[in-house]
Image (tube, rainbow, N blue to C red; front, side, top):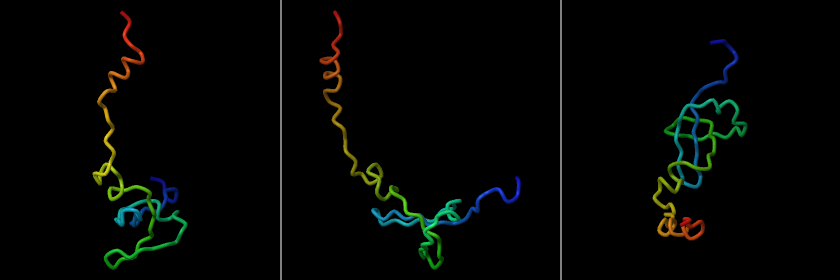
Length: 85
């Protein structure tokens, strides 16, 4: 690989404020986060990046998702576009 053309890759703390979750992963976003904000996780300071959705706040993972009513969808389609006889 060519030297000097790749972004810095290092540990970053991702924070989901709505789900009160902070997890550490490696990312190239550490160098370009821009906010300069940091968070302390287990005694180590990491640059922090706020995310909109994580497993702590996504309806699928929390079990709070809406269940769509599928009953009657075929009948509604047939009423609207009915089969030709």
